Image (cartoon, rainbow, N blue to C red; front, side, top):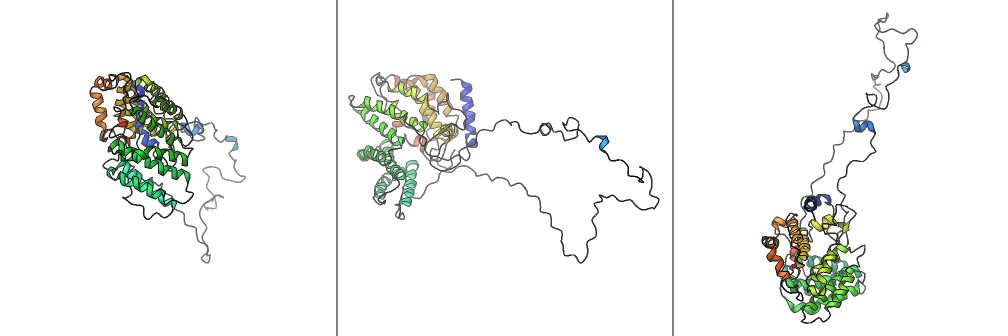
Amino acid sequence: MHWSLLLRLSVAALCAPLIACDAPAEDIPTTPAAPLAEGRSGGEPESARNGVADGQEGSERPSVPVDLIPEEEPGGLNPGDEDPSGEVPTSETDDTPEPQDPGSTEEEEPTAPAEEPVEEEDEGPELVTFAPASDCAQAYDDAMIFACAEDQFWRVLQRDLSDRKTVWELHETLESKLSANPDPYLHGRMVFQRSQIALAMMLEQQDMTVFLTLQPDMERAIEIDPGEPFYVTWLDTVKIAVADLLPFDIGLQSALDEGFKNVKKSNAHTTASSLIASFSGTSVGAAMSTGSPMDTIALLETWDCHPDNLTDDPEQLCGVGELRPCIDWCLANSWKAPYGGPGLMYHLGEAYARVGDITMAQELYELALDLPGAPTWPHRFVVDQALWDMELHVSKFTEIGYDQSASELVYANSTYGCVFCHGAPEDGIVP
């Protein structure tokens, strides 16, 4: 990778919020971002582009020919002659208004004032706002239940971490109140979000009391909405993580093989960008002897968020649901991932560190610190510590042994694995 590419991506990332100012967070309907401004194309008349009016020198249209100027009328006056009658001659095209009949009822129509251009109001920064804590008792139909469950999920995932257990229990209660045939997409989403709360509790709060519900909830979400590959890939990461903890290879290799197969099953709703981001943080932590870390690097080098692949092409879309241009999704931030830009670049850099590539890891870490939000990012210290001594940082992955797992060393399995990207900023403003 060349530094010029990183510089271009850094500049593009800083512009990304402007490029995609109407772009939504995932699953929030909006209009996709417009492309970057391009040079003006043809189509204007040559005279307009050159600033030449018709009839002037340089215009394609000639002046009025002399022989088309009407000659003097018979009996008319030559220039400079006076009318012997003493009357002032008038032109047939005299524009002097005739006096209006006092009895006339006609009134002149008032001239409409010229419209002043309306200036677009600055919408201001994107905010991270949350619904108040609620037991959703006011929700009396499926739509209200799903909406309230969604609101409470994001509140506890991003900010009110101590309420996670309460909302995890609430989701189960709300599911029991659904109608006989709820919407499968929204139903599956609610069940899957319950599993994500459980995973966040296990990682960030070390609460293992919910462990036995984690995999069953993901499997149930897939059963309810079998067409959503996002759930399948997350289930694969759980199977890999559990198998990787065991002292012997009991299902690890088969879990890895299945995961690498499923991560390629993107569709129009769920792009490969989201599947790769979700899968690679776990797969790269397996032992080198499994082949998974190098397979993960190969996968990441096809990723739309990899700087070698990332462009400002607005047709290149990433995400889940309502998609956004990849340059925005990968490098900028949103209310659902207020530090998604720097977080994803660290995610990618750490994969290279895992396989001993110091140069690529360092370039990506430095890019992460150039992205929006990096100065106020609560977990910037992770990147700063790595850059302080890159050899030491990389050695923690490379010196553990060829047959040893690094799953406990990767950030994705740390006590900040979720809030690393999704944590809410203290001032409530998306950086």
